[in-house]
Image (cartoon, rainbow, N blue to C red; front, side, top):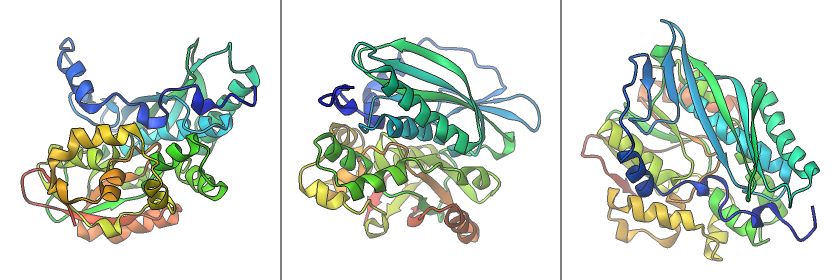
Length: 346
């Protein structure tokens, strides 16, 4: 690959910031042709859950998801690793255990050398090996922009499926990874991200959300999702809306990447953050009182972000211990209260 060609310069957007705007997506799905769904399809497109779930017997259900996007970093191996981690996360966010994956590959072969493409695939393969699953096949096309991701199949007990609904008043709100991935990637695209910050980005974005498997077995975990392209505000709103509860967020408890605030002050913001703000700000009490930093980071699109969950007080210590044992710095960032679905930032 010529030195002047960077992966992030070959795509108009990167990572989960590639997602279609929520309002546009709702309009597309609203006009879709209605389907008849079998009763075995426990979770389908009718909700905003992270994956589809299909029951095959009394003790087993299939969890299926797909996720792909354009480059978020320039290193091809790292891009493949982040994309694979992000795709597998949807299985963990449903409480499932991944079984195998299929690769989704679209590459501008007239621009990228085969060795570069090979490194992207290797990055994805290495993450799948870490997750204990094979890449069993896939599909590839010659595309104008580089794209990579996975279709992932997993398994879960039908009675242990975790969804983004079910949060109850009094539940703790827990976030397992820091925010700021979008800010970091904006700086990276302009060659302004330090080596230290890049290492931090990679450590967070390639950390598999494996605690989801154990969380599935805890009845007191009432709701579970992961924070990705719609930011903390968007994905928390999905929990509140589905559960018909309000959320109180303690901003000083929200974990941030170490240089997120500094880079934000220097002007590194993604376009997706503004899109998320315009979509979800009406669900935030006193939105006009937020600082620029709060407004931007609460809507910052996360690629391979952390698990976000509602947990009863009786099991919160157990949940935090699970995260700690698996190398996560999960934090209680707020609580759910009985009220109409709204989010308040303190």
